[in-house]
Length: 123
Figure 1 (spheres, helix red, strand yellow):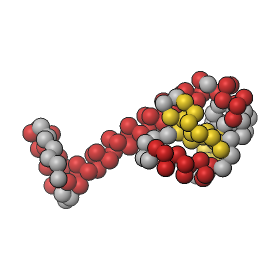
Figure 2: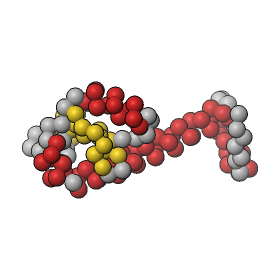
Figure 3: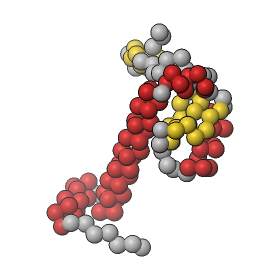
Figure 4: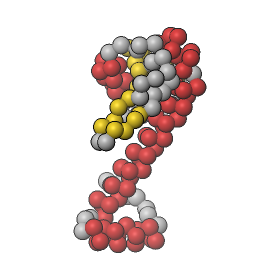
């Protein structure tokens, strides 16, 4: 198993957190790395979403009514079947974050909260 070096102050903080939460140091580190990687994935999808909004008019012309998969600002695949597209993307890209979205008339829809239900806003 590889060895990871952690600066002493950070290790002390991890050790204190593990004691306080009654878990192992490994569990604290694993949770921290998991959260860090999740945040990186979230940022990547957010960047892809911004590109999608910028290119929406062009994408709408070509892919209206289809799901597209965007990676590094480029459409890498498309399909009318979300599950089929998702399976191909996972085979090709593994766990790499790839945005999959339905190309609609509008670039994005607002979400409206009614009590505990969330609905897509009607235009």
